Length: 341
Image 1: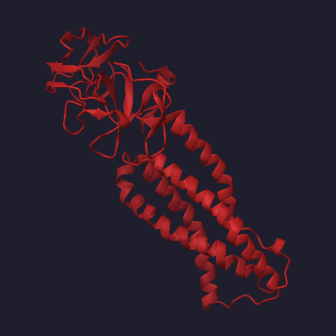
Image 2 (image 1 turned 120 degrees about the vertical axis):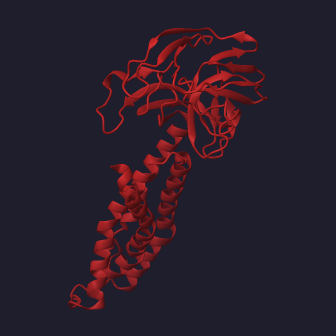
Image 3 (image 1 turned 180 degrees about the horizontal axis):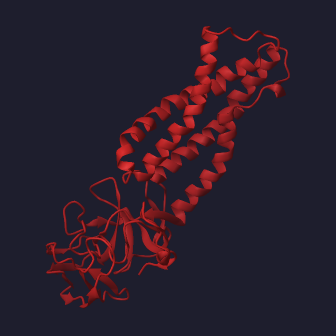
């Protein structure tokens, strides 16, 4: 259903900017002028330009929430959106509007009111300014929380089955390895290093999207993968089949094995109908090697589309599933609150 509506959603989202700018113009310029009109001024006659202009602005204000909702929906389904950059832009824009009102718009309203012989207090403050003053502290708090404490992330594929499922919503720890400036991703405080076996969220080195995989190779490690068996620095990582996957979907019945990777033993899925991908290389300095737990259906460091992941691309370790809901199915209540291992 959503895929069918996407062309319409994209069109509406593009209209949000011009309609929004028109509403801002009316809110900041045209509306104060209307408020300064004489109380007894006759309303514009039907079919006149002023009559149609009033209905135009009413229609624009009614349409704007629909367009903004379409823009938000488009951002939610897009995998390549940098939400940190988006939050930073919204924070800067709302703060700029607030500052612009205090320095420019408010003095202008007062001067226009006094020139018209009216009390400046009777001229309503633009709605845009009210929204900016309300949004600025909230968005700033969200930006700080998301940049330095925790960040939500939605699992978009089956590559981490059976550990994580498409539709899981997880929490990523942003301060486990250090604090970074939002958008620039420059680390200004180091607090630790990634550990082998952790499930990490990182930015793809080759595409503008976010990925989540398990960390297998640290800088300088010699990693070999043959027939779904992993050697790290010449030592074979223990792997023992424990049963078959009992979940729904096309992976039902696929073999499940327990992999003993240091202090992070975990289950991996070995789909027989998909070919295993071999690999043999040394991890470069300040880079990491990742693999998905769904070993034969994961685009990870074994492939040039991802490759070795530079240290500055790491976002943080995944720690908790706070919700699991793959629309249009029912929520998977049993996965709510599960820790990620």
